[in-house]
Length: 117
Length: 181
Image (cartoon, rainbow over all chains, first blue to last red; front, side, top):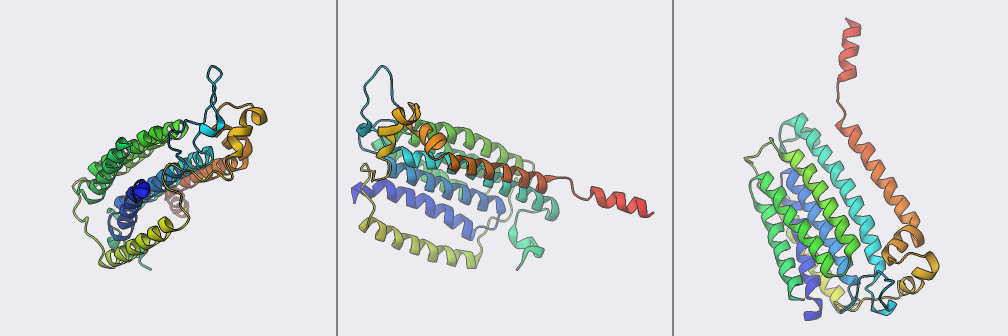
């Protein structure tokens, strides 16, 4: 089980984010939950890519670096895309929250009557 | 790898503080612990490109969140939970734990042994195929360039969305009212 311990920590972080999204009433806390869950998913990808004793996936002119000694570069590329998209969605969520505060004067989602489905 | 576990513990502590603290500005600063700890973990896991991007994005997100919370409801009155949401939260967390056990017993490789069936090709071919010494840059800008194009599309769509939501409302209506008078 020790070989999976970083994944367990990562899953705990994800669960904290999900708990915040599902149970908090303040809209800023919900956005923070989304951000934390997103960080946990990015962390999971980079953890999966890690090779024990591996090197960063960069070649050098002055040093001989074997391709077999590198960590997996593909999840790193995917996570780079994911981080930037995460910033874009977070900015959009914050803009919605600021606009809702201007309309209702509160961040509490249970007091925003017109949002009830 | 003891420093990895220390940083992961620090991130979990920062996340719990961010979720449970009453003051919204303190919560936003506590999320900064999670983001910056994450960038140090990326450096430890030999992902320097991702770590640089994470630092920049984390600082930008913190500035936006502080813009949203400063001068507003700083002494937060109601940080209570929704009862239905708490029940759903417990249910969902139980499902997540079961899914994690299934994954650990199933196909997931142990930590430190990546499954390199697809990406074994990239380090071997990067220098001769694209001329880039950084394999990650060769993947995002050459082998999977359409992925980056889609990322830019999403980014600019989000910028349009933010501008649409944040524009000054009601300006046109007032002009219409004055015209009708």
